Length: 192
Image 1: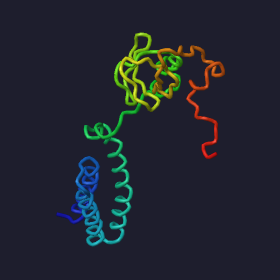
Image 2 (image 1 turned 180 degrees about the horizontal axis):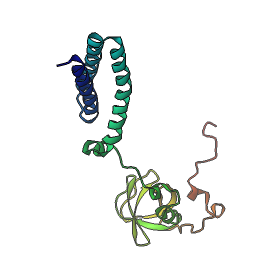
Image 3 (image 1 turned 45 degrees about the horizontal axis):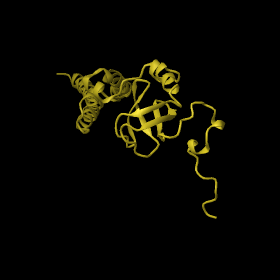
Image 4 (image 1 turned 60 degrees about the horizontal axis):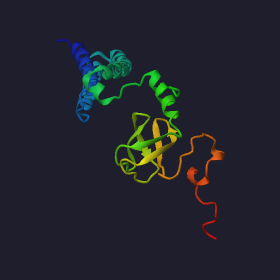
């Protein structure tokens, strides 16, 4: 058989092994074998056909190797292993800042509900007949205790326990609320 055929076969084997290395985790063994096969094909072309054919094989390898890798990486997300390892791209509706779910959650600020479970710091809260996942302000809240929604950050609902005697402020006006309900630290100098 002509040595040029062996060079072509080694080149094709090297490109195939590079593509298989993308799909099969081998710890670099297939990558090493592919590089060895590509180099053997180029060396055989130089040895048996001279520098013109050898440089032609070198140029073909320099173009075909990146092209094969690009094609393999484009096809990889469609394989079963690629689908398991890569996350799905979120839809445009899911990443919009004014989604209906976010608008609905923002309307909960100031409303009072009841903790359905122990919140340390997260748990379920019943507000207006709907169960909502919420976070407490850092303290634990017992099940059955009344809570008020104080803030919505993205899709996180932040709640604070409400005293049974105290009537929660229903207005959104921050200036009409008592300073204790705003959760501000003391303005006194702690070092004095």
